[in-house]
Length: 509
Image (cartoon, rainbow, N blue to C red; front, side, top):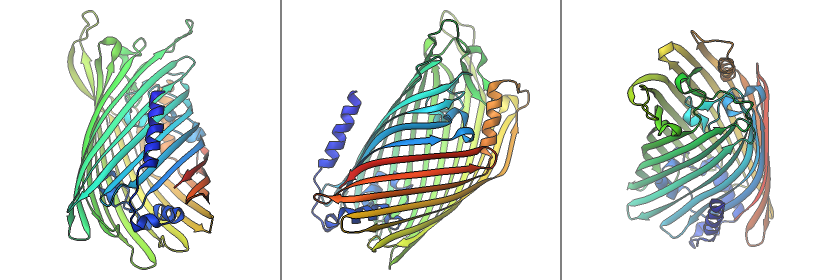
């Protein structure tokens, strides 16, 4: 495919960009990898959504390419619409290149091909983005997914100012080769512009704006003339748009978004970081077989806040951070009169599904300097999450809240030609409270039973163990080849065990 060729060209161009001759570039590839992995030298992930902050991410170049295989088995612990597991292979390339004393170029490109197993009650891709307004049927099954993604950006410093721009594009094809046969084509483009100004010698104050354009075209075909499952257009908490169930299977999701952030961060990556972010995303689900009739629409508002402090003086590095988010989603169902030909006149709208979620997280880290002989770190964190969803016309309600505690650790040790990296994480999560109220629901229906199962899985307690190991070997002119693998297992109190593993290999320079 042409897009695959374009990705390969991007990877090649990233790897061949010229690098500056500053002292930071003289670091060995092992030492640069240690700096990249250590949380002691990292700005918070939320700050790095701002492309102007990427100028200050690191002063050295680092490029890598990996190819690998993933296998995840969720079994009875999964959300039905996400499937019971995933298996597939993929590759990813990433590069960060100081193009001059004042310029930074950065980018990623990737491809994956795999299968989501036993997907139920959703024949639409990107369920987490578009719920509850998905097209569905009672049959379901495995879905083959093919995804291409590339992103790139550039940041440039001029005097007191740093200017930056970034672009991210994702294309996805998801389909099934037996009845019912959905075919979904996704296009998701996001871009950002940012400017940062020096506030004294230590800090940068930055403003970023973001935009997004989203589209997904889907249809469902049946090749067996003796069988055709009913196709539903779900509207949340077990409800569907009854009038258009059955015959109309061609849809298009037209979405767009805007957002931005104000960020204060230390140029040295040591000190206070503050970020306030807001994003708005809205979409309409249209029936393409009915002249793009707008069936439903939804608006999603998300606000985030971050306050962090890190201290890099001395051999011991440490830091703390507090994060919070508020998200509110509200949908509308469009009401139509009697059609004239194939045209349905819209006569009004009605409130339908709505939800809101609140999350908070307190975390920290402690570790050695990335210049130490053995680089190590420990990252404890505690968080909580509260979710409430309602379908007001029928007084249906789903709500739950839960807590989560985790500790992650890692260590890296390098010899002349070899480097070993190990990581381990242990987490425990549990329900605080929960409620599922479905007045008037027919509990004999498959989709109502699926909703009950999802609620049970969302409120189940679990313990998680995650292990990862990577071995690098230096070859040639300061390049490395590596092999890495990871394994994860979740023990749920009621729903059994979920586990997964990944293995990959690649090179870095």
